[in-house]
Image 1 (cartoon, one colour):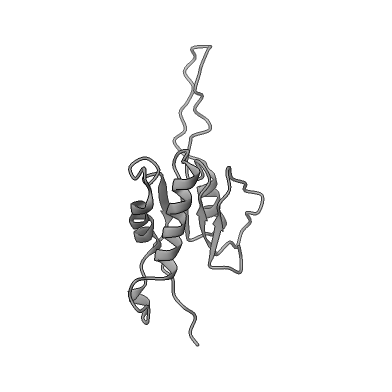
Image 2 (cartoon, one colour; image 1 turned 180 degrees about the vertical axis):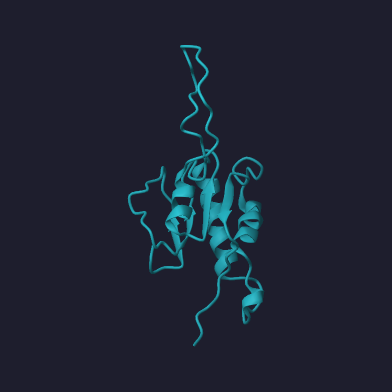
Length: 147
């Protein structure tokens, strides 16, 4: 995560074991609910009936990557079907790394957030599975190294 510019994780669930300061890679997480944020201090059930303070700061693996230094994180807000998210991920990577234009200037390569939105066309369940991926962080684009 400190040497690559893009890291992809296509696995179910998520782990923060590899996170540390100095992360400079943008991260694409395609696991179920990998981009979901939740308030861990807000109990779902309160059998005692007491009023607990509500904390609004969310937590999640996506924010863990952002706090570790990742400029951009793509993750899913809810559970998704395997085949549809696989199609989505392939289209996302193709659009991001092989733009339809010649790619000769930095301005011609698309932003990752634009590719995230455009890749929804690959899903059969466009408004269920295709709407699950979201992008956190700052805008990033693919640029070939200068030769």
